[in-house]
Length: 592
Image 1: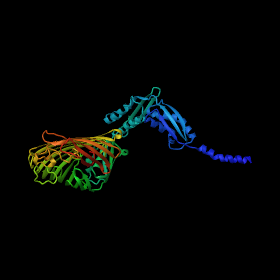
Image 2 (image 1 turned 90 degrees about the vertical axis):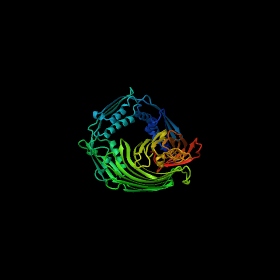
Image 3 (image 1 turned 30 degrees about the vertical axis):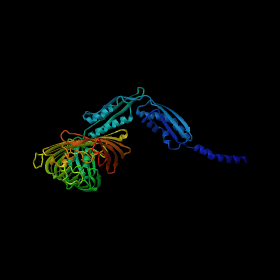
Image 4 (image 1 turned 90 degrees about the horizontal axis):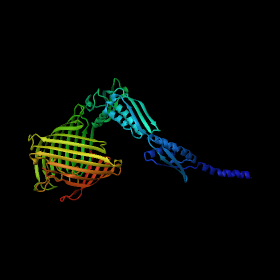
């Protein structure tokens, strides 16, 4: 009877023994002695790291633990550490395991020699010389495989981008001497032939043959340049004619030193309708509607119409544009604009006719044209005061004047600028009193600069400024839009729109012949889309040299909404005995 009992006892113990042999646990891996990214590199390369959130048997732990020091040493070599020492410790912590790796990386291998061989034709290009210099600057620095790979690949990409489409990397060696802790980089390219542009084929265009040539930043026979192809892509997208734009160099079909370019196009919707409610502290509540014909005919003419009905602003405008041949995106524009404006200091009703020419000029947008402006206006009126109130000035005028402007802006991302700027300059002048109620000349300048800083670039410094001056023989004949006022969302916050400037003897703001405004603002974003801001604005409109800047400061909220940046500010005047309280400012729109 004893044997059966022994068998029963063994069968009773079998599940317990089996459970003990299959008992599993997780592993905590700790790497000490090095900072990131070395710490992360070591942790990612050690096999034990795979079991941080997975169960593992004791046998697996011990096997992987024995491999860990060698794996850690190998992980440091791409960073130039070929003489590392790794001490490992294994501890049981309950059912889990803790593995500690103490790393001493030792002295790194440094790059002592760099030899980059290129054809003379390739080295004649500044961009390729800069790419080569980036590799040569590795001399004297710690050997880093990732930096070496990036610099080598960047030079290869630069060769391709500049038309050396057959370039080959024939030598690529990094010779490491661990005893001397030194490394020599040896690279050589056969650049080969530099290709030129062949024929550009536009496929799917709705326009007459040759019309799209105006967007080409190159001519057939020019050297191939990928940056120019990107410019072409951006220009065609910016023209607003197409829903699809694909610029495809036919590299596989290149022949006789030339590469043809195929541009695949699909027309956008020809007529678009826009509209909806809006709000702005300068204009009040309102609605706007628009109809735009992206192209009217096969010659690419455009026609845009817009109606705005707001509490303090009503406008009706139309603009017809005629694109002209050429690579400077030149066009003639003809428009009319009726404007009924009611600000804190003035009321005006004017009709303006415009004819101008716009074109690209040395990376600037240049506009030269003629304006005819006629209407009536009231200046110095407050609210619903009677027109006969003393101090209010009434006028009417007709002005025919020329206008020229230059504008340019650059940014890393126009949806949300981390680093960017904009500049706008304008000059206006009548031809004496010809066809005009008064003669005047005017200069204006506007600038804005944005710079992100701090951890993850969550802070932005925004500086802006405006300046202007008018020469005239009859200031009273100038309508409000040709006078200078300060105050408002884009001027001195803490004051109402166009509420400050030179006053008459009745204390009425009539506008000035000069303007000088500056602003500094700092934003901090807690999340990708939400932030706060603080600002200080200073400036005023004035006559002669009697410049007395008004100061405004406050705080605001920033929201990167689906419809664009929304800015809500609360501003208050500083050291102003006549103005008190808080003014709400609301602006919706892009940074630049």
